[in-house]
Amino acid sequence: MKEAAWSVKGRWTDAERKVVMVTGANSGIGLALCTRLLAREPSLHLCLACRSTVRAEGARRELLAAHPGADVALLRVDVSDVESVYRAAQQIKQRYTRLDYLYLNAGIMPNPRINWSAYFSGLFSRNVVRMFSTGEGLLTQEDSVNEDGLQHVFTTNVFGHFILIRQLEDLLCHPDTPSQLVWTSSSNARASAFNASDPQHKKGCEPYSSSKYAVDLLSVVLNQQYNEKGLYSSVVCPGLVMTNMTYNILPAFFWTLILPIMWLIRMFTNTYTLSPKNGAEALVWLFGKKPVSLDPLVKYKSSTSGMGKNYVQADKMNVNLEDAERFFEYLIKLEAEMNEKYK
Ligand SMILES: NC(=O)C1=CN([C@@H]2O[C@H](COP(=O)(O)OP(=O)(O)OC[C@H]3O[C@@H](n4cnc5c(N)ncnc54)[C@H](OP(=O)(O)O)[C@@H]3O)[C@@H](O)[C@H]2O)C=CC1
Ligand SMILES: CC(C)=CCC[C@@H](C)[C@H]1CC[C@H]2C3=C(CC[C@]12C)[C@@]1(C)CCC(=O)C[C@@H]1CC3
Image 1: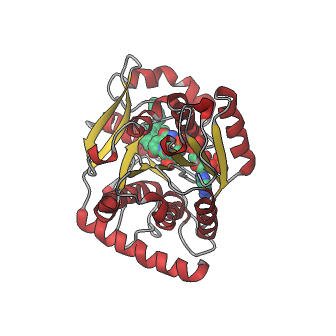
Image 2: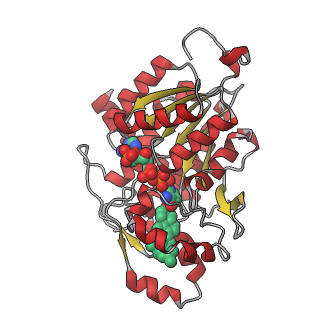
Image 3: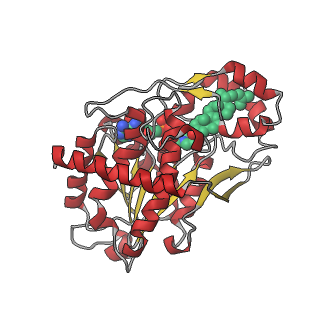
């Protein structure tokens, strides 16, 4: 923090207090993550980066009710709007001298549609467990274009966050005390939904799958580019979690009705974490790890066993490194255009 060093109950010096920022912190997995981080380390400087001030204030109240005296700051940022990201980055630079953890969690899946015929044929196929754990081939979405002419899902889930990282480079890059980026990716990330010639997914109808695979690609290249500067990147998969996102796919009462079925499915796949608290498992686990000890090619998956026990599973990612580099070049070019427009 830029203010004079101070301590909570005289126990921590400012240098010891980690600075953590979470995008999309006002609900679902982001809010559960904040709650768990404060329970684990009450001395944190926590910054909730949210697009709605009202919802962010609500989240802050909830966090302070559980952790009175905690340092919870708010930052308004709409990651789907590049100009808002530049503005927010300026404010962060005025408030903090370093960032130890940046959780890139905000995400959208607009206008989801379920392909019921794929669902029913999948039920009787060999891929049934895979279908239930990844949702592969079951969902399509309707994307839109923002004021900069960029695809909405791509900008929210990937590009807005990329600009944020690049703008905060000075706060994040400290070779002596490494910082960590943690992306909330998904089991729904799919290489076949991503096209290196159409990285924004202008032409397809699975922008969500494409954007989450793009996150996986980007994390790999960020490690190549930034590790020696003291910045590390990891991807996390929270499993299937009941949040506003899933309530947008099917209504909340329907999910409640099929809860026993989902507990049953848990016997076959550990990806049905279901609660935001369980879904945040891998995100919290990474907070306790030394960034240098992590594998850049691994996806850390929040997992819940049939008996309801939480754990983290590390699975090697199957990413195309050529596509990853090509995608990074694309992002750098797009960033240059945006810099010219907004900086
Ligand atoms: N739920 C699930 O099963 C899974 C979720 N995920 C991922 O987890 C992440 C969190 O989602 P989840 O908690 O489930 O869903 P929520 O809808 O509860 O959380 C999404 C968060 O992102 C914020 N957000 C959305 N758009 C923007 C924007 N333009 N600018 C700033 N913030 C924004 C939302 O803010 P607001 O309240 O204003 O909308 C909200 O705080 C997402 O990246 C999602 O893709 C991954 C795998 C599975
Ligand atoms: C009996 C039962 C569970 C029915 C629901 C069928 C589908 C609606 C779900 C099966 C797998 C789910 C899934 C997601 C959404 C809902 C399903 C397709 C996600 C795509 C949600 C967002 C993610 O990031 C990953 C999830 C994977 C699994």
